[in-house]
Each structure stands twice: as structure tokens, then as C-alpha cells.
Image (cartoon, rainbow, N blue to C red; front, side, top):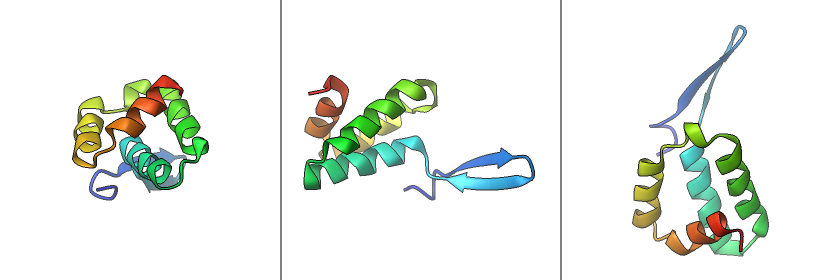
Length: 80
């Protein structure tokens, strides 16, 4: 999923391909589910605050449902 939706960044003469923020959020939700580390939820909140316009919420919501991450997503958004 990450490579299929990668994004191209160009900085001066350097071109980089990075995984989309939605993919990072999904992985961090999975990591939180596996280990309950609040760090992942804080990271997600930071991404939501710093780049809301870059996040495809329809794509993200679809994959949250597919992966059964609704409870984790709720915690990430609510701050509790």
C-alpha cells in the first residue's frame, strides 16, 4: 500500500519518494494496537495538526474500517 501511493518530493537537485501520511497513520494505529505505546497516538495527533490538508480522509477512513482500527483511531483523535 505505501509504495503504490508513494509521494514524490523534490528538494533542490534531490528527488525522494516517501510513503503517504495516511500509510504512516495506519501503521502507527497498528503499532498502538500491538503495544499500547502512547507515542504513536501523539505522533498521529501531530500529523493531523501539522498537515491536515495533505491527508486524504476518505482513503484513511476506508482503511481504518478494513483493518479494524476504529477504536484506536478514536483514541488518537480524542486525546484519551
